[in-house]
Length: 119
Image 1 (tube, rainbow, N blue to C red):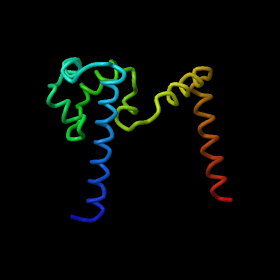
Image 2: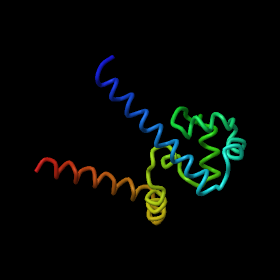
Image 3: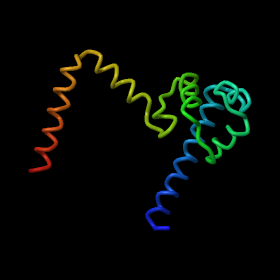
Image 4: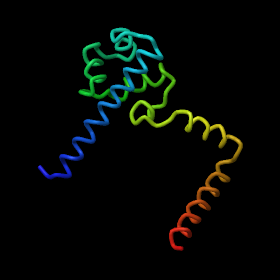
């Protein structure tokens, strides 16, 4: 096995463990549920939920979607720890603009960044 493959496997393992901790934190501190209750709500066994929370398993799409709906967190937060508030605030700010205005602004930003990189 290549060294880069080992590094990738270690990173994936660490990400999986962090994801499991986030799910446990959501279950315990926000939903105030035990493993059996949450597992039933998202359609898995409590034993499998224990594996997921210990970083030894991953939720399938259907269960992740149910957890997302139940918790109010984005899938990005559950999977990667990305800040929900940032996403929500961005959506709120963008509601004031048309799709064309947003695309035009993004193109401007892209060209501006390219200009700065060339300086």
